[in-house]
Image: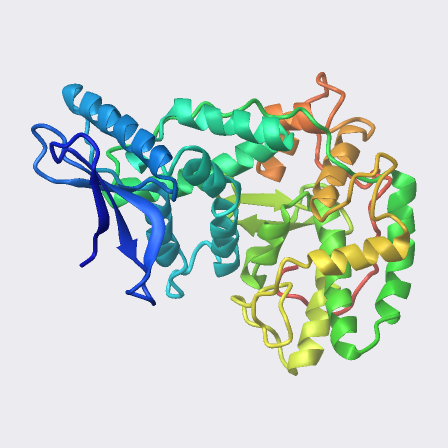
Length: 417
């Protein structure tokens, strides 16, 4: 029998406590009390766990739950709920399906890992495994307060965690566990300028790169560093996001010659946050692409195809996020953190690009810069610049830029030139 030690709390069968046999030891009893509720005018019996082995606590929980559900029926609300823990378990099975192509499996695993951390602890432990249809903006605001009070997290962290929760709730809508995703009032974005580099630090990086590549212990590490070096240089000369360059293919690389006979490299992104765009690189950036092309041609014995990733592994496949490689370079240069103790990341190169464009003489138009970087004017003004009256219509990445790496004349022919 699946019910042991029954106790009819109200002596009318409406609120019943019982315990279950242990799964692997049916002769033993699980000490946690289960609750069975029969709500007036509701055909289906409600069964929930009290999550306590103490009978008095279980009784209080059962009576409170009965009153809560009865009131809900009087208001016309659904009372048969899908607990957060059960819905999350189903979402995990769905989301980690190996046949799903996007987002990447690594990103999906990260989402699940984050959801099973603080959100799980709050919605299951603090909110007693709340039904997903009862998660409203009010409940989300309680989550924000819980995180800030207990863990002192920033608004940026809460905004990021909201993204994970929204992905889960959107799936709940698809599965018809809830009718619509609650409209969440997210905390304001922290107005924080991110860690970047000074020109002096940048010169340290560029002068150290060759030694860092050559100090590799073996050929595999040397190759990884060779590619990371040009990834750093390309990113700092066009302001792209790390993820955008990671999936860049040779067919998306081209060049454009302007009326003044100046030729610029152009990279086409179709996976960025703001959709498809073309980004013009600083003058002199062709040397980075030429070097990568020459290396790959020698490695293959022929030209790479247009659908091969520019920053690929030896087999031509997509590589990881290169965080460890970049950290190795920063440690080699002694620039892993800035003076405020903030850790530099690949994103610091994007910020460096924006800062230098805004501090050029004359400065680049905020509008042009935002379009080239695939972001908004508001983000540019709030995160990167201290000039909001810059001239408009100037070319981006002129040769006068003091951080531009100058290329060498090449006799080879390249399909993107």
